Length: 142
Image (cartoon, rainbow, N blue to C red):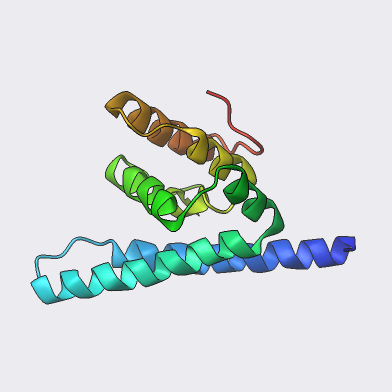
């Protein structure tokens, strides 16, 4: 794969992630309308499936998924944790709760965390927010 192919692939993935992020953000807006809430929930699940398919289609990301033997359930859990702990926001052009799945480093970091305590959940969430606030690249360190 030549440089132009890699660039094109990266650009297309970024475009998909941006579109998915916008739709996830819209589907996550609070509402008091019960019908709209149910519709948003199923729409959000469909959009998350698209996001996870992007992970499976990407060579680097699929290797990370294999390394951690990650399931759809694991990815949903990370998303829910991030949304519940401040990651449902835009930072420097990234919707944090979706962007963590777009990069090998952040995906590996999140999948390597045991989310079995409040301390671990908060630590992962805050670290990912900090990662995007600081414009970091690569594999995050604690």
